[in-house]
Length: 416
Ligand SMILES: Cc1ncc(COP(=O)(O)O)c(C=O)c1O
Image (cartoon, rainbow, N blue to C red; front, side):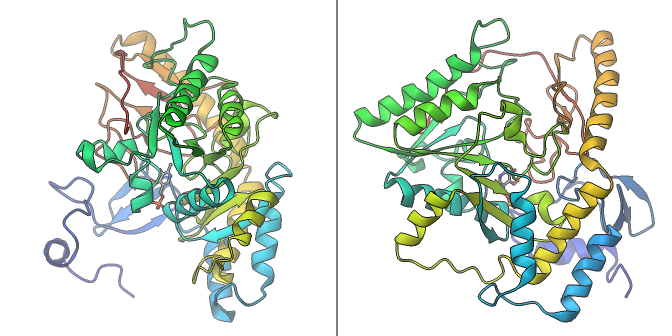
C-alpha cells in the first residue's frame, strides 16, 4: 500500500470539500501531510523527517512494534463487544487497578476522553442525586455538549445566556499568574476556600453540587501545578456538600509526571479521587479510554436500573493494545525516562531563564516527571495536539518543564 494516495494539493481540495470547516489543520497556511511515523519522528510525503513535539497521544512512540503486533494479532483472532466474556478485558482492568489506590477498583471502558468525562458526570449525577458541577477556569474536558458546558476554555466563546446555570468556575490554582501566588502564606487553603464559596453560593440558590472536576494538573489550562494539599481540601468541601471529586487524567496520566503513575498522586498518598478518567496515551493512538471509580459509585449507577452498553468500549483489540502499552511503559522504564529527560530539560530551560528576562517561569516540580513542556506568552504560541490555537496549550513529550512569560493578575470568570 502506498502511503500517499493523492498529491498534496488534491488532499487539501478534498478536505475543504468534504470535511467540516471547523475541523482545523495544523499550520493552515501550509499544512503538513504526514504519511508515516516511527518512535518520536513523523515523515511527510517527501520523506522529510519531523521531531514530533506536538503529540500527546503516542505515549510509547509512534508505531511501537509491541503495540502494533498486539493489535494485529488480536484483530486476526476476534474483535467484538464486551457483552461476551473475554480475558483481555478483565486482565486489562486488573493491570490498571494495580496502578491505582485500592478503592478505585471498578472500570468502565469507553473510546475517547470526552466519553470518559461524560460518563464520569453521569456517575456523579446518579450517585449524588445532585446536578451542579464545579470546574476550574481555563479547563478543557472534552467536545460533547455536557463537557463544553464545564469547559471554560470553550464556553467562554459562547454568549452568557448559553452558559449552564449549573456550572460554577473556580479559580485556577495557579501560583504564578493566579490570585494567590508563591508569596501567599497558604495558597492551597485560599484556592480551596474559593471552591467552598462557590458551593455556598450554589446552596443559596437552591442548587446542590454533584462534582468538582479538574485535571490533576491543568494541561490545556496552562500547565498549572496545584499547590500540595489543594485537592485534599477541595475534596473535604465537596464531600461535605455530598459531591464527588473527578480527576481528569486524560492528558497527564500513565507515568507522564515521572515520580508517579498518576498525576493526582503528586498531592500525596492521603488523596484519592472518587472517579478518575483516562484517555489519550492509554492506547498510544488507538481510540480507547476508561473511567475508574469506587464500588459504591458503580453500585449506585447500576441501581438506576439503566444498563450501560458501549459498542466498542473494552473490545478485545483495544484491551490487547492497552495491555501492550502498559508492558512497554514498564519494560522501557518510560516513567523513569520522563523523570530523567524532564530534569535535563528543566536544567537547560532554567539556564535560558537566567539569560532572558522574557522568561517568567520554568514550571516543573522536583517530584514530577512529566513536567509539561510549555512555552507560552511571548516565547511561542501554545502547542498542543488538540488545542493549537490556545495560548495555554503546551506540547506533551515524554517529559519537559514548562516555561511561561511574565504574569498578570487574572480576574475571576464564572458561568453563573
Ligand atoms: C484534559 C482533557 N480531557 C478530556 C479531553 C477530551 O479527550 P478526547 O479528545 O479524546 O475526547 C481532552 C482532549 O484534549 C483533554 O485535554
